[in-house]
Length: 138
Image 1 (cartoon, rainbow, N blue to C red):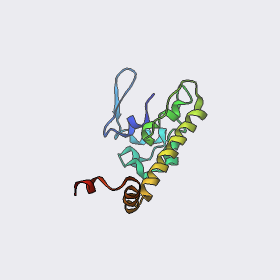
Image 2: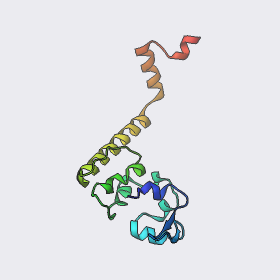
Image 3: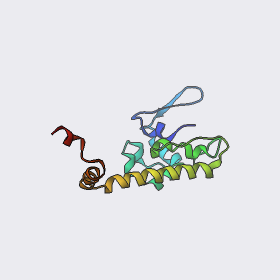
Image 4: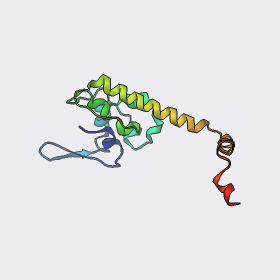
């Protein structure tokens, strides 16, 4: 199973036939890759994945043909930046639910980091812990 990050992350990817005849690289075959995967040119050319919504990234696995249905979800683990346990026979529904749950957890965590007020954290630490570490050395 080719994971999507194995296609997207490297600057160059070489493609070969079963007989080891070189077919081309990611750049020369880009229009065929885009047509087969429905991954936008910008992503294939190395644009940061943060430029694409989670729904866009999820759609990149919609038309994948895999041996096991859950492999479609597993192929997105690296692209979405999450970790999930993999179980053969889990089915696509269970695997995608796990994937979405982990993406939601990550997004909540990132949201919490963005809305944190540094002054409030300092004040909370001072109030609950008796001061900041740097204050001990003054």
